[in-house]
Amino acid sequence: MKISTDIKPVSYLKLHSADLLKQVNETHRPVIITQNGEPRAVLQDAETYENTRTALGLLKLLAHAESEVQSGNVTEQNQVFEAVEALLAQ
Image (cartoon, rainbow, N blue to C red; front, side, top):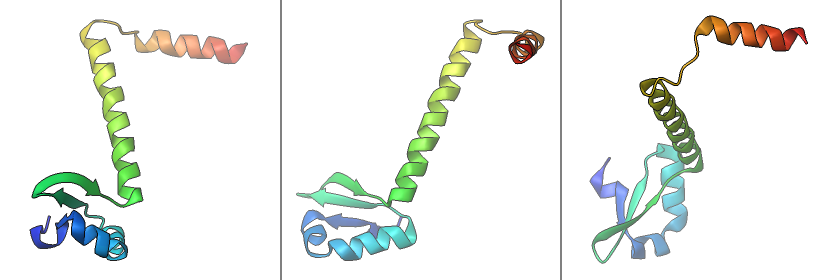
């Protein structure tokens, strides 16, 4: 993150919104918007946002799967394949 270009006050956003949109879409770096010197929001390009949401979704699935394994809620591989083959044979 480049502090001088990636942190802007809300007043800058109001005056230069098109420039900031261009910046985040070209660099794929988020811009932190401050208000009264405190961070209040993050401006991010849509592609990076979508990729982040997808990654978080996958991490949630992995965390859930690990929890299932830790609790012993598992099925042997051969049992899964047999069940799939039986379904396909119907």
